[in-house]
Amino acid sequence: MNNQKKTERKQFDEVMVPCYSPMPMIPEYGKGARLWDQEGREYIDFAGGIAVSCLGHAHPSLVNALKIQAEKLWHLSNVMTNAPALRLAKKLTQSCFAERVFFCNSGAEANEAALKLARRRAFDIYAEEKSEIIAFHQGFHGRTFFTVTAGGQPAYSDGFGPKPGDITHLPYNDLPAFEACISDKTCAVIVEPVQGEGGVILADDAFLQGLRALCNKHHALLIFDEVQTGVGRTGSFYAYQQTSVIPDILTSAKALGGGFPIGAMLTTRLFASHMKVGTHGSTYGGNPLACAVGLAVVELVNQGKLLEGVKEREVWFHQALDALNAKYNMFQAIRSKGLLIGAEFNDTYTGRAREFLSLAGEEGLLVLAAGANVIRITPSLLITKEEFDEGVIRFSRALARLQKA
Ligand SMILES: *Cc1c(COP(=O)(O)O)cnc(C)c1O
Picture 1 (cartoon, rainbow, N blue to C red):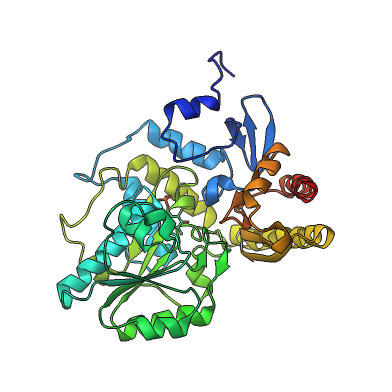
Picture 2 (picture 1 turned 180 degrees about the vertical axis):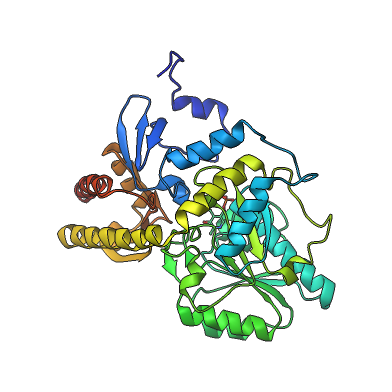
């Protein structure tokens, strides 16, 4: 490709803050659901950059949108607005319940904005004690200190000194526990319609309906964190659209930029009104490059044909994983909502998801883990039958190796 010297994985340990432990290869380019590393070795990508690359790698429409905008204007800050941001905001309000959009650069920032909005609204119109946030065990909402504390894995938020206060954690899908806890002091409830990082756990519709009814009763805002489930992942544009519940705030990121960093907090006109001039902000939020790409993503994803394709592909994966399990007997559960798929190891293979990931990598397949026990698959929403079939062969080889190991 060029005569630059190859970069080596070991350099990571010499120059990077060691909060990650990346795989041994260094990908150089991608196309669709395939990646190639510096050695020219090819990989099938069932990971999709953690549910981000929703249209695969190097989708021509996204490349084009980025190139066109790159030659016009990159950045202004929020001292001025710009056409791509306004177009994307309009498109998002036409695609869901929301009437107002706040742009930022990541899922954590979208949730940070949502939680701050909920606190500010309660502060504006109710008593100062109305500050409790209810969240759920095993939930994940990002890594800023507020959002990671809202997340339901203390291991991620412990060890950084005093935490943001008044956040309560309850078991997911346990409506009686929620009903016993929520009160007029609750200002917001934050929940994922499917817990992604937590192991691909689906919310019961009755649970979400119960959250909605009790939030109404106690004047608390219901926040749906759709950072992972949003933008076509589950077979509707947002996952809530397959439930009978409408949230007050929805957060979106990951697939929204198809690989370009962008996040958004979506809400109603009424709730948005509490974020007055100066209450919150972001230098890059609404950046023209990100919004031009985001607009191309939303235009492509929010179409009946693509969303139906997600449901078809879900069936491919389910059938293949069932067949592999019939052969190897390694999973106790296979769960999915669209192309957010989790396969949970049975007792014999408990805790071996990471080991499977390395073996899969050696076989030329990229997959994810969600915790120690669940293999997670979040591929391109456009993955072809041919890419899928090849991936399944490699998946099978990696399972066979894990079984023998
Ligand atoms: C990934 C994720 C986040 C955090 O997004 P970042 O872009 O990494 O900040 C928040 N919530 C959910 C549900 C996620 O899956």
